[in-house]
Length: 299
Image (tube, rainbow, N blue to C red; front, side, top):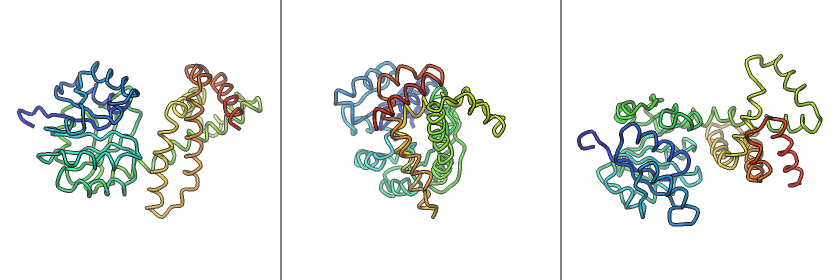
């Protein structure tokens, strides 16, 4: 990092990559490149426009993006995390830091680190909250033998990324295990209140739950959870498959987690329908009515 001004590269330039890149640009990082497998395709037009607006160099190839990078941030889908590392390995020079922010199991992160070997300094990163609105300041955890080395740089950019441990997978384990509850509650919210909508008892059920959970505002919690699933359910389902793998690695049978996978994926598909997308900024009654109708049509 000559003169303390690193060159950054994003592999994967979807919502997370764009948000973090935008935040880092505003924090004063000038040299940022990106590569996404969608760039050469029609679906990549919006990603390229976003890169231009942020001030990111959208590369013509993975080699173009990675060349000269001091820090590589992998922000792809869970299923593509290992393949993304394979695609960049031959183009790495100077042992850059490789920040793996993908939502995958500790075992997958350890496998990725072994794949990269001495070509990069691998860092396990776990994102612990929605990437908006905090962007690069979203709470994260870092882990691995190179965590101590990269931490001051990240802190200097305003990032909140304490060290979870010196072992690769320590950050991922926290992320994956907590997702059992976070994404599971989302799935339970859908199942509970979809039934409540069809029974005509939405308000009654929500009000009765205050007795058990007085600290939760179900007026806000229901539409928030439904919107998150409708907008990101398919990606969340893929993450929950990694959560299930994490549980298996720990010797815990992922019974509830696999049911969450099914609910998240189904809701992600339902959420693509115009009738549902058009009410995601409405109240819970309107949202549940549209979701109920869309779900009925699927079966």
